[in-house]
Image 1: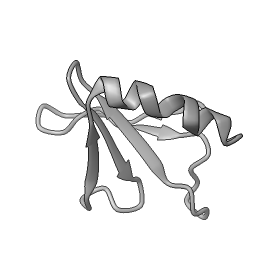
Image 2 (image 1 turned 135 degrees about the vertical axis):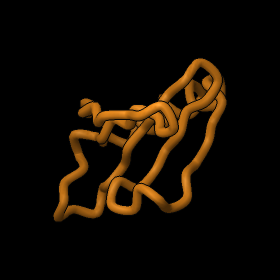
Image 3 (image 1 turned 135 degrees about the horizontal axis):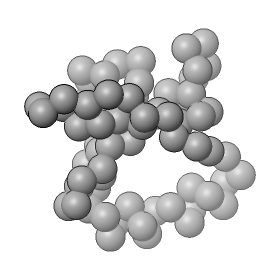
Image 4 (image 1 turned 90 degrees about the horizontal axis):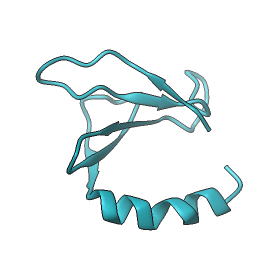
Length: 70
């Protein structure tokens, strides 16, 4: 997976969309990062709910996501 950056503003973080995300597909994930927070959202619903993780929790999760083959 690669991430495609989207433009951010002062109020909105700079979101990066997964290369697996398409306008027609079910996989619609965007990620935004800062020094102390990782945000995840559905790219088809950018104003909807967001998941928030600490960098440590995100780092613990990544090996499991990578192991799924996606």
